[in-house]
Length: 541
Image (cartoon, rainbow, N blue to C red; front, side, top):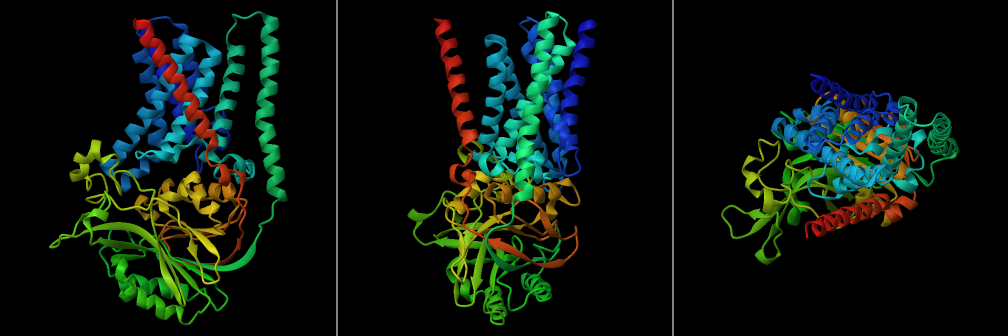
């Protein structure tokens, strides 16, 4: 009975970590809770590590899974509205991966002691987040550093570290707080030694919390947007993605966008930005200039010779030579040729040829089947996962849009705006501001669209770039270079905004070096796991 009671109590302790992580998360969370959110889980692990029973592995993995599953459910439950089956897969898998990280930490700590063990937790977790940013089963929504998205004044130093620097900050503070509380809790140390530890740990918690925060606050209040002032208009047409958008008339939707834009643009406006798949009917790229929607845009631009229009679309590319087709290409009905379907964005202006960018960070299961050699059999179930039959095409390199005056703009289509290192490719190619085009209506009126908008504030900090964000519905807004939202629309209302962005060619330390914290952590993690793997093999002989 005692063992059952302990197990039940420890399950509750693990669950408390999941609840604290949720309560800390944007958009309505109490962010400081993130600095103690992992402490209950650390106490749970500490209890099991003190028990030398050989059968604890399965038990503690279950506790870890409960904590991580609760966090994932409470924070990202809204995925259900875009994909019911897909939400169960995403939440279940992500929780499982997180629990594995905690289990690996438990095994290393048990065999190598606390110093190496706790260090391994930091390395393993950040390596996992780095993997989640780069592999095909990608879902970096819960990267710990994203928790500060609503408090840009705390994280101005992201221009040096990126969001993974925030993850490192969270993990270190949690470990220090845990050690401090453990010294208060357990009485098995000499009193004098315990007092020294408590004083030292209290000092370290203060330094690690206050140091980055003070530096950031100073940077925040001193920073002024840099660059050339530019007039930009953004449109939120508010077209229902479930009913109207892909079932309605494409020309009618375009006319609505142009009607809204006419209320805010004038001869001084240099950019008009419209949302993801604003042209939903599908345009063949090799004959794009003859498309009716493109001709409508050309006619509209005629009245505004300085205007560049950035707009989302669905595009098709045909391959007459089958040897040049991509792995995502599908057979063209009634022909021997193949074609790709893209979630794309384009820019056009007066006498400016159309330039197209293909979204390249695709949503797993919805826009792309990850690792088709392994999971290709699931293609037939793609509709149930919330996607389409077949994966969308991508492009292997980042390409900025070049405007009429030669300035460069970085396009980010929806999901791409939460990938810092991915976006750094645009910045290193001297992008001067970022245009985010998205469609956040899939998640309905839930925290999902608000979290997505706030994550863009991190992008502004990482690169010191202004952001103009056009959402079909959700939140369209302007974000300055220190992460402040300057203007924004309301949920489920058609609207148009006119504002100023500052174009610059700043290349921050993070833009130049990317997720170096994640790379180092991944390298050290692989080294540790290989070492223990070889050690175990040698032990068998």
